[in-house]
Length: 129
Image (cartoon, rainbow, N blue to C red):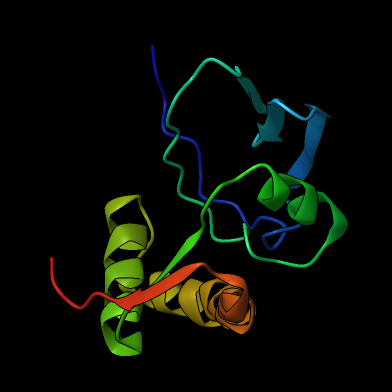
């Protein structure tokens, strides 16, 4: 029987990332949330979502070096906040708790990520669905 686990506070991102290790110049191994995986050299295209790919922290720099391009997608702050609150509500938080989480955790992360946007190969704005 599956039971829903209570929503608990977590360490702020990007501190939750355990490691991102480059094995050699052609393979990348990552570990995140206790999951691990590898991208083999023979894979012709990998598209990944990652808020922290442009950070200047040592392990993120090693990941960035393995990527041909990193794009920064910008969106309206109010739209982003609303989408985050709605997502937290869908996953079990009350509206109040969702807004508090966004203020306490998601907004500081958004500022951190936005400060690294200058390192992106491509920047574009997306306000649509």
